[in-house]
Length: 312
Image (cartoon, rainbow, N blue to C red; front, side, top):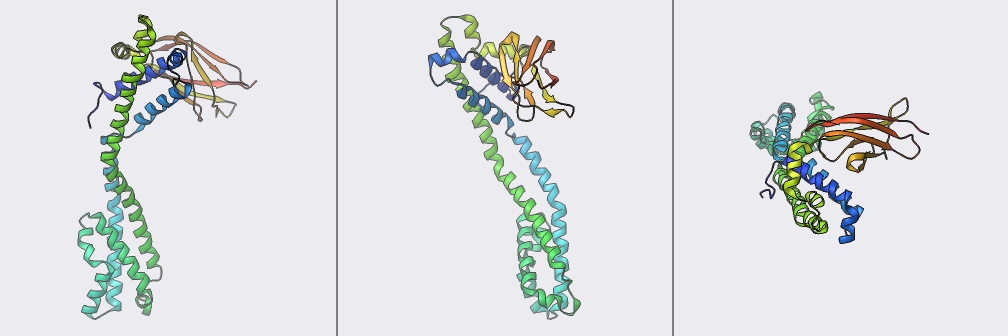
């Protein structure tokens, strides 16, 4: 699958968020044109952008898989040492070489060599067979104070630790192509929605109003992004001496007539907008409003602010 957008991912998300912001600011015009442009439509579009942006890239998945491989090495070594101990306890229990060999094959010996060569599925199978062998033969192995009773628990712990990490590794490995496809598919779907639905409707609604049209003209939006449209404001809102996170706060930027809310943890991040100097207002029912004036937003920078609000 190839991207339908001819720009970097970073630029794509800035463009999409600006389209989302413009749509929300002109939503009443859009809803009068087509009834489905309700608040829920804007919310869904913004949520889809956030979800797509949060999906891991192929490089991130590769890095995760590498970390998993490194983490499995010591767990594999523990499994190998445990199986070596099992062999010694078995050798003390069954002294006939033919009987011993047959027992060890049942215990998973045939997987030992491949397990030592980082064949993770062989490690898992060796552990599974070895654990079952211990369960089936614990009485014989513990006779004459040979195998400690605690060894079964030790073997099981090693088996489970490896199995858990192996399961995570397999999930990450198998999800790589699908995960990458999903991210790109999500991006392509958003690009189609923005360029084939929202923006054409915006231009139709403009009825020749150039200022309105520019809000939904892709090339104009890209120029704004390139000139500093990647700027914005982010931060958190808290209350009280303990500085507890305060959610449900509305943040409004006067010059842009732009409003958005913070999340359940008190954090917020505005849609992208042009650099400049702004007045930013914070309001919530039951709390004194806070107004920040002359907030300088530099080009390509998300300015961070920490806001304390006091209950009425």
